[in-house]
Image (cartoon, rainbow, N blue to C red):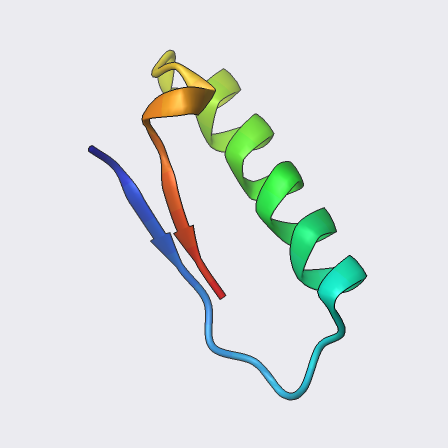
Length: 42
């Protein structure tokens, strides 16, 4: 399963959720791997 990891300064829950959704959506489009296969850690 693909993993996306990001370290950042303090983010609120809404920002983290938005990043996770956008990272997953873009990575799935580029790689052809289903969005449900990704793990995102922020």
